Image 1 (cartoon, helix red, strand yellow):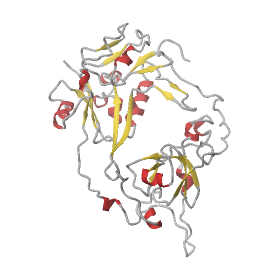
Image 2 (cartoon, one colour):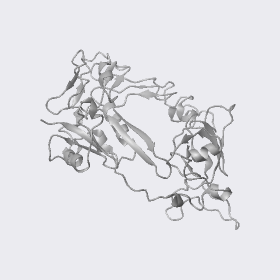
Image 3 (tube, rainbow over the protein chains, first blue to last red):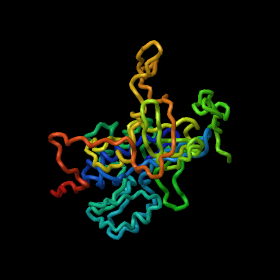
Image 4 (cartoon, chains in turn blue, cyan):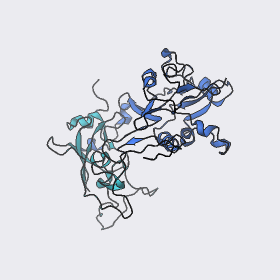
Amino acid sequence: MTQLALVIDLNVCVGCHACVTSCKEWNTSGVAGAMSDDNPYAKDPTGTFFNRVQTFEVGAYPDTETVHFPKSCLHCEDPPCVPVCPTGASYKRPQDGIVLVDYDKCIGCKYCAWACPYGAREIDEHQQVMKKCTLCVDRIYDEALPPSERKPACVMACPTSARLFGDVHDPASNVSRAIRDSAGYALMPEWGTRPANHYLPRRRTASVTGNVAAQRADNPLAIDGAPPPAREGR
Amino acid sequence: LFVNPVTARAQDIADGGWMWVESMHGKVRCLCRYSEAVEPGTVWTWNAIGKARGAWRLANDANESQRGFLLNHLIADELPVDAHGQHRSNSDPITGQAGWYDVRVRISKAADDEAAESSPQFAPPARLPGTPETVREWLAYVAGNGEFK
């Protein structure tokens, strides 16, 4: 059985949000209509996004890591959003494992958003239907596109090729190889959802920047007086 | 403006607080964000995260102009005239890239009674010919059912 999925390399992602904007562009222009935004040109805009990148820092200067963490629907093999749906709008396709929402059946009750442990669902406040990543199901089978472009929009857009797309049930696929070779992991396996999407973990590398190297001679604060401590007292 | 917590706390600037950043060319009031990824003694920001009030057809109270800021007010296209009266471009001598990364600045905490908005602010530009007076508050439709709100 085929299970299409994304594999995202956290070593390579630079947090540029190209996947976020290309996802929004493709899906807001798609057959299902716009992903609505509120106050897009005014104060405190909000909007519907199928793909978001969260960025956080780990550690203290100079041993700092900036982690960019793209998040979208993980297309679980045992998706908790499907059995809770009262209308059958939320379903998992048997032929390729993609989890989808049938907007014609969805009544916007948000049960699936409560059931999803990953926060991947996005209610469209104006259409009042639940939306989510479709793995660009309207791209990947489109025979009008050249075969090289039958990939999700986010994968096409990624400038660092941090995003891979393929069948995780095919041991010879590029995504299966990446998971095997780089110890790819699924998010929150304790929920038993068996996410299809995987992440390639950050590899630990030794910091080559010690405290001496981190304090440069022409630091503007050093010119005015004592240079700042490279680390906070901790 | 991303500032190392050591540097920011030395100026009593809070994480998420308003601060001033000042160079020989100008000064900007902006929001501070603590970052351990920045060297103490260095500050940085994204390029062009701010917009002038009313630019890009944004509402006058859009976050882009009220909370975002432009670093351009701190930099100039030319270096100060040197001792021989020479004008030199403020750009990298090797690549010619604009010297966006090497201006010396002073940072300080914004006073509590100051306006909670970025500075400088400008009067919004007049509406361009051919652009509609109002901006849609939201956009949503279901393709194929003939409704377009």
